[in-house]
Length: 140
Image 1: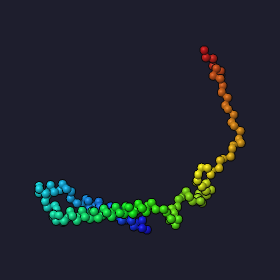
Image 2: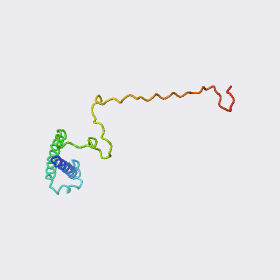
Image 3: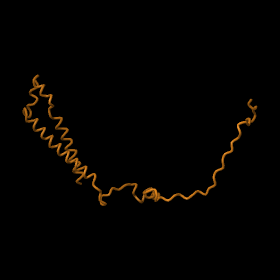
Image 4: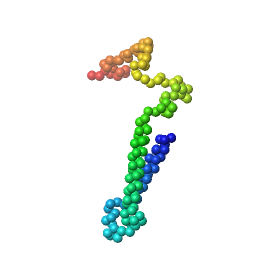
């Protein structure tokens, strides 16, 4: 529950930072004021918008950074048995009707297969290359 709330806060702060950065005027925007674009900064006042928006950006950046640290800490904590994740590979009774697979562990604990008692297959006998094919003349 806490992890979900922190994730929602993380997304909200990230979107807020993006929006605030896009709203702010760049440093090069002051150069345009000399060529007739001076009225573009009158919405928030000459200096008020820059200060308010940059402070809000700094606050959301601090929230984002602290929230990232909290989420990283929560991601590295050991999972309690009550919250242990379930996996289809660790399920002892598969739904397909097949017997469960042998538990995974170290290779030394796996028994070796029994030796095969079947006889070895007979080797194929090759014909010599000097025998002429049937119906033909021998090569010279």
